[in-house]
Figure: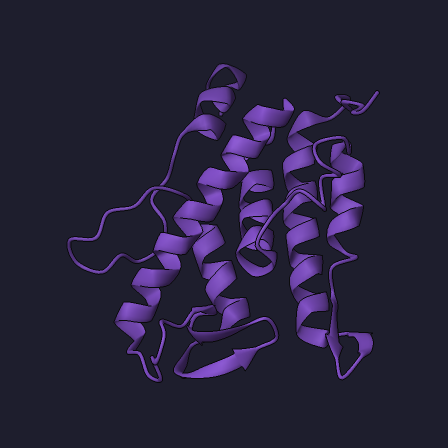
Length: 179
């Protein structure tokens, strides 16, 4: 691809995943598939550390005990869209110039964690520091004991690698954050 088109391609907004008929949303299909692969579908509600979850890891509605895959996917895509918008807002607020792969990685991270403020150091970490920090969020506390969880470790490696993939497009550019 000619260099003059690369910037335009990276900035375009793609459609997220396989949409239910008539359901329109913006984003990137790769991140949806990655998130849903890590979340796995559960038709029944379950205790998920800090909340009761259902479907693809979304918060269950009060009294909700079951969900079908179509509704679960719809909710997940809606949540992914919200998380992606929050990542883009953070990017603008903190002055980052993230590539689509970096936005995707942080969208997956936010879907699971709930925010990106910690991993970015409130907008003060460089891309390299963020890529390394992502890996630190692989632990859970159960019965007062904090330990790494295999599934979270794999997810964090995938997110960090995706974030680093986006860094490859910015070779030679390292923005130092903070005062």
